[in-house]
Amino acid sequence: MVASLNKTPIVKKRSKRFSRHQSDRYHRVAPSWRKPKGIDNRVRRRFKGQIPMPKIGYGSNQKTRHLLPSGFKKFVVRNPKELEVLLMHNRTYAAEIAHNVSAQKRAVIVARAKQLNVAVTNAHARLRTEEQE
Image 1 (cartoon, rainbow, N blue to C red):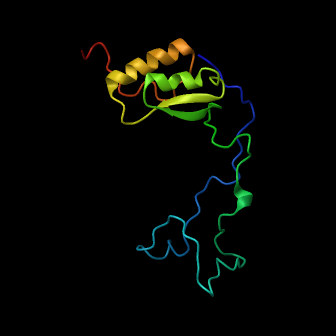
Image 2: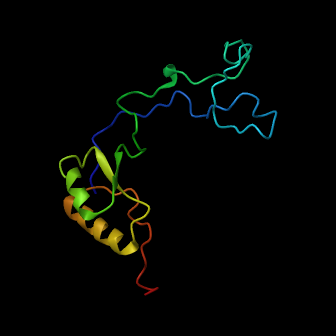
Image 3: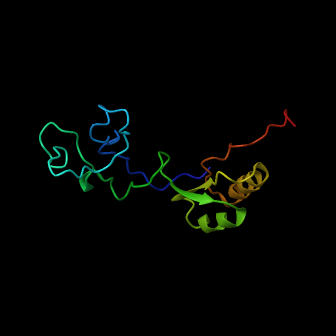
């Protein structure tokens, strides 16, 4: 199998998700982040001891942004023809078969990826074994 070119270790500045202000207090306030907009809001005014707000400083290293733990970047593939785009970039990008592709077409895509020496992230999805047939 082909190995990725990227050897830079992936370092996340923050792995914990940013939670919405007062989402721990009220069940009706979902934890998904929303920027506080109130004129007196403590979080918006960045008072000491309040929950942190997302800002540009939490961004990932440009070299490791969008990288999978394997070192590849994702490229969504819907048919065997789209694999040929990755022919020259098989050390940087890995194919990921789209969720709405049938099991029959998946087998064709995985076989073609093996010929082109392209990594597939979800190659084992929806594969039937010979015992079941």
